[in-house]
Every structure is written in structure tokens, then in C-alpha cells.
Length: 251
Ligand SMILES: NC(=O)c1ccc[n+]([C@@H]2O[C@H](COP(=O)([O-])OP(=O)(O)OC[C@H]3O[C@@H](n4cnc5c(N)ncnc54)[C@H](OP(=O)(O)O)[C@@H]3O)[C@@H](O)[C@H]2O)c1
Image (cartoon, rainbow, N blue to C red; front, side):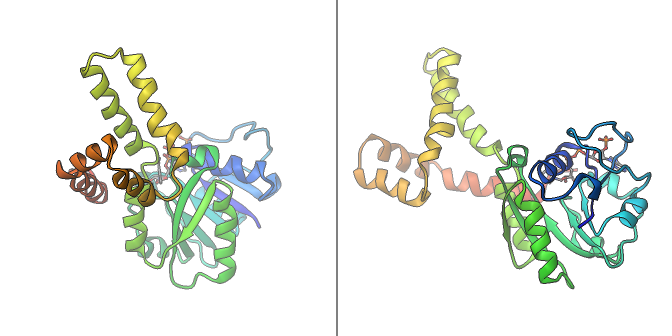
């Protein structure tokens, strides 16, 4: 398989480019990268191809990953009949991408891509074959786990939760830390404590619902806190946050 990455030197494009090479999913001679700033002598220690344009990238590759920002994509013209496109772009729908003539998969990795722990939902457009799906799973599997959903709407709902990666856990850690500092603890202790519960103890969660139920059933001090959080609108706040992610920033 020959792979092209449009935006392969960006944050997400680099993550997948590096991962597929290091893991031997794609040979360096079968990988081409196009970016804005031009060819680099070295791509994570590999000698890859650097076509001069997006269209030249399409001519080289059987599969093209689109990892440019949506605003940049709108300036790029590309015809890709007979090819498989895997688009990482948030908010650029399948029907727009299909106007390139390609078979299209949309996939939204998260920040875990950096250390190959992304949860990547994907959905497939019309005409995508089982072999295409297998290729998409192989490529995206290099940066973590992959879950295909049935519709584009499901992809967008799921991405509201997964797309931000560490953002909401970090918000929880920040809030817990603020509670401690406003109660008089030094900032470094507050941060250490918040990181322990949000990052380290999170490793103990296999079934989130069962963990919460265990604490509630125990009916101790933590249960009092869980009940108070729900009474204060914890679930409502999180649901509203997810709705806001889906709506995007006010323009
Ligand atoms: N960041 C996230 O958490 C996240 C999560 C899921 C999906 N996404 C989506 O993933 C895509 C990439 O995001 P990112 O954060 O990786 O972006 P990024 O770091 O800004 O990288 C963008 C890449 O696009 C290249 N580029 C810009 N204009 C170009 C042009 N006209 N022709 C060719 N290449 C061009 C840049 O080249 P240079 O390196 O030369 O500047 C760079 O390699 C976006 O569409 C975003 O919606 C992002």
C-alpha cells in the first residue's frame, strides 16, 4: 500500500506518520508527505517522498490521509477518483469529501495519538469496501484503538466525548486542585493530589458505573460527595459541555 499524508508534519499527521513507519505498517519508500513549509531532509529518521502538491500526492498514493485544518483544506483542490481518503478533519462532512471522487472514511483521533493511545471513532461513506475498512483499521490501529460507528452523526456525538482527549479530566483535576488551594493547601500539594486521583487512580477504573455504584453502596463519606455532586447538577454540567463541543465556538 502506498500512503500519502496531507499535513504529515502537523501535530496529528506527524503522530500517524511516525507510528506507521516505526511499527512497519508502511515502508518509508511507500510513504509520501505534503505540507505547507516544504520537504524535510529527515522524517523521524526515515527517507520518505515529498511530492510538490496535493494532486501529486494523490497520484503517488492509494490511500490519502487528510490531516490539514479545515480552513486550509478549502484552499486545496484535489481529485482522487479510485482512491481511499481517510479524513481527520473535524467538521468537514462525508458528502463534501466525496466530491473529490474518492471513497471516504472519516476518523477523529484524539491527543492519545501522540503516544499511540488514541481512541479513534471512524465512519465509512458510500462505496467503502471491506478491504478499505481493513486498511483504515490497520493504519489507525498504529495510533491506538479504532471503533467504527454506523453514521456520521454518531461519529460527531462520540467525538464530543473523545476528541478533547485529556481536556475534561484536566478540568476535573484543576477543579479538585482549586478546592484544595482555596482550603489553604499549597498549590504544589493540591496539584499532586489532584493528579493522583484523576490520572493515577483512573487506572483502577475498568467499569466506571460499577466503581461509582460500589462507593454509593458503601454509603460512606465519598457517597455523600457523589450524591451532592449529582444534586448540584454534575450530570447536567457534563451533558451541557458535550452539547457545547458539538455546537462549536460562537462565531
Ligand atoms: N488537534 C486535535 O486535537 C485534533 C483532533 C482530531 C482531529 N483533528 C483534525 O486534524 C486536522 C489536523 O490538525 P492538527 O492539529 O494536526 O493541525 P496542525 O498541527 O496545524 O497541522 C496542519 C498540517 O497541515 C499542513 N498544511 C497547512 N496548509 C497546507 C496546505 N495549503 N497544503 C498542504 N499542507 C498544509 C501544515 O504544514 P506545515 O507543517 O508545513 O505547517 C501541517 O503539516 C484538523 O483538520 C483537525 O480538525 C485535530
